[in-house]
Length: 267
Ligand code: 0O2
Image 1 (cartoon, rainbow, N blue to C red):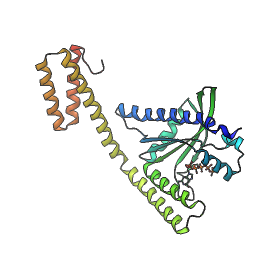
Image 2: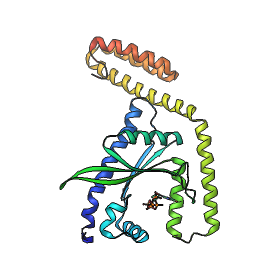
Image 3: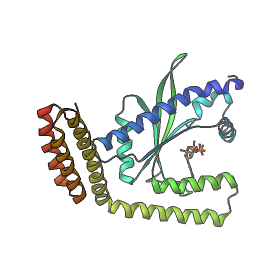
Image 4: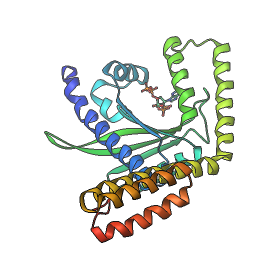
């Protein structure tokens, strides 16, 4: 394998990261649009830099021409969740997908690393269609909570700064911080239902308002203007009262009116 071609070698990995980010972002957005709770909060992706790949090869005694097989995180996706429970939901989603094949799983949540690092890693095979045809590559998907991510980012920068020589006192403080993060995740899990209810209501309201306003806009094109102005005033009155049930009732009534004019928001 020619090292001069490293840019070309990394192209399929870039494509895989781009595609997978679109796919996981779609899952997040689609769940929210459907008015439901999305177990995915954020999606990040990156391709390892050539310097980082060479560093890993050197550290693990991997020859350059076997790096594609032995460095399994050249393409990396990071999925951030709000709650620990969501992490396992995302793992299940990945297990059920037909566009990727699981190679290995590492549960650093039940068995955190000595550093205090917690995350769930799923390594998958994923096929991209490149100019030269299909190519199956490895992708590492790291799934963690917002709190775990906060800790990992800070610790990673310190690891980068100190390499193998992190002062013991600092290492211990990071381990204590990791325990605090664990407690935080447990505390948040205990109010999960309440937080989810609030977020669901927010999503339902946002979707409802958007549908109602589209229907009103459509009605302006086909119905009597004075009647539509009255409907609009009624909408603002209910909206300002802030009662979600009333808004749902109004939305249903509006649908019946719009049906008469074939002006529903979905048409
Ligand atoms: P980067 O810059 O994120 O790419 P292993 O031989 O299996 O023990 P390996 O092959 O490195 O080790 O796999 P592992 O442990 O699953 O780690 C892969 C990635 O997980 C790392 O990639 C980090 O992103 C993350 N990770 C693992 N351990 C830690 C840790 O203690 N602290 C932090 N902050 N992240 C960790 P890279 O290549 O190290 O870094």
